[in-house]
Figure 1: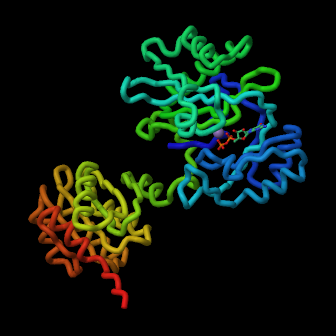
Figure 2 (figure 1 turned 30 degrees about the horizontal axis):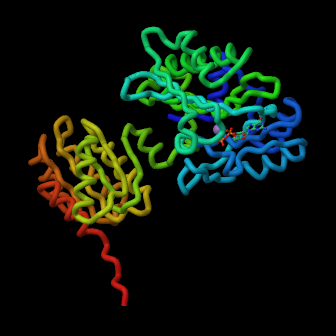
Figure 3 (figure 1 turned 180 degrees about the vertical axis):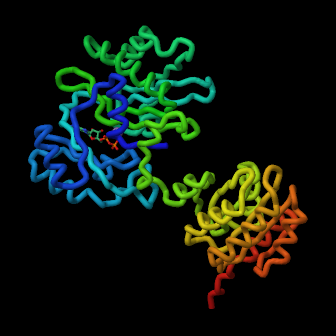
Length: 391
Ligand code: GDP
Ligand code: MN
């Protein structure tokens, strides 16, 4: 789960990271009021769940209150397309107004989970400002990496060594040690997946201050971090994925037209492969999980149908914990409640398969049934509306 920059700064500041003074605004008047409180010049920043806002016109240094108001009016409600958002972009609903900093140097600082060492790893560079992907491409030699032993945590000498390797001097070293250890503790104590400060600026006076902050969290741990879960902003999420998550479904939108309703991530991957092999393209990945009730199947249908590209739905269930009769009931119920107008292909196997097939056979709905996964994929591809041949 991602959070906004202002939320990440708030959290990191509580752990001891130096951040500029700032305030939140939801209207141009509020933004101007914030600028008055903070003092000019100030920086007005679009709050969306994405980096690359600077390049997309979402960050601006303003010298007057009128400038703040005009820029805020221009930004609020606008959809920003950045390198990270994809073509649909993210809509700006709130702004962060912050005391402007005189930047002498920009440092990149990231904390990620290194799956190879199974530890938290720090990645840093003295040439911050640009995205880590560009940095890795354009200036890989500047990158400093350090793996943290969970038994000791990030110890002081290690943090000092990192500060030295970045070429920091004097008071910056102590400030860097404080910043690094604060980020590490925030990462560890809040079950984060990523903490990124880019840029961590060295000011004209030689002090360190976090000008940008990004955090994302392990959704599997949110149950024990209610203070983090409360920071979720559904307005920044893909509507289809948010709806699915609300109902405990794992959904990922894709570009094809064959909607998929499947149990288990492995079977979902295999089904997507079989669809491609049969010459089709999946519209989504959807795992309804185990023990799915008929209502849950209906929700899965509703979720898949929110994608206007879907022209056929393939239901593929290999029931272990699931029950084919519940799935079949759900499919029939979906037909009646959702008002399906597109073809549906169903392949059932496993627990209560005989009962499940009987329900589908007896129901007065035009479902295409298939015996094997390969047959189901081929039937789904064949059931798509045929494009009208060009003259
Ligand atoms: P991002 O583009 O989404 O990563 O947003 P950032 O918060 O990193 O802002 C983009 C750029 O704006 C930064 O790399 C800085 O160079 C610049 N910037 C942000 N805050 C300030 C500030 O207070 N003063 C100045 N001069 N530049 C700033
Ligand atoms: Mn940034």
